[in-house]
Image 1: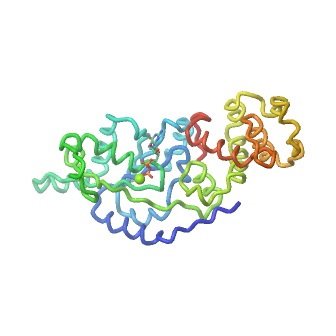
Image 2: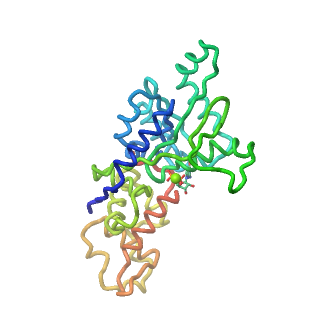
Image 3: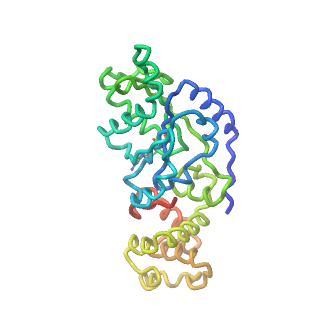
Length: 296
Ligand SMILES: Nc1nc2c(ncn2[C@@H]2O[C@H](COP(=O)(O)OP(=O)(O)O)[C@@H](O)[C@H]2O)c(=O)[nH]1
Ligand SMILES: [Mg+2]
């Protein structure tokens, strides 16, 4: 399978973000902690050349924290910092705001020397589905409750004050995922950052089986509660289905057929529905039902 998706508006979107970023002191860059390296977009490098960046390794509640920690050196350095985060939890944003302020210390000091208190502006950016909107809401929640956020009052595209002299742009910037590299594209597809409509879930499911068996060898057995190699004894009534699992040569497709058998996914044609098995496997991963995993 080749994931081939070049959104037409890619360059315009990057240009728009570039314009908005001119007003920004610190970039808040959201990454999906289940694929911290693959959810990075190299085109941001140019846009942020001279700006401090806070990397938010988001969805840490679904990720393999020990593995994420191994990648952290990629997200630190001069004018670079990171935070492990779960945007769905409220009351934790002070850690992010403190780091933003620290990254903007040069500006804060410059203004202080003139006797002025600086306002630090940040914009949340990242690829689709990594949790940008959730993070913006998480940061703005306190501010909006304080100012009485009533329906019809709030306008989009405005700077919202979220702490002592920090403002967040209330519309996050979406960067397009890096799909030039197929290995990365697949990982983006697993977590839901590539549009599902362009994906083949038989192929993607089989690729996922291969990937997960390599990185986390026991996960599939654990999830499906049985030894997949013995799955064909489970539902004798399905044994009559002609395309016997043993005839499938590729072990990854065979695993999909076993999952179909365990879940009793049979197509109209009376065969194991490995497409549905692929979808349900990917869905299990996306919903965290396979456990806390990080693929890089
Ligand atoms: N478990 C978990 N889910 C999250 C987190 N952040 C966002 N989500 C979920 O991820 C999905 C995509 O989030 P959204 O903010 O719309 O992503 P965006 O496309 O980058 O704006 C939603 O279902 C969110 O509830 C997080 O830290 N942990
Ligand atoms: Mg969004």
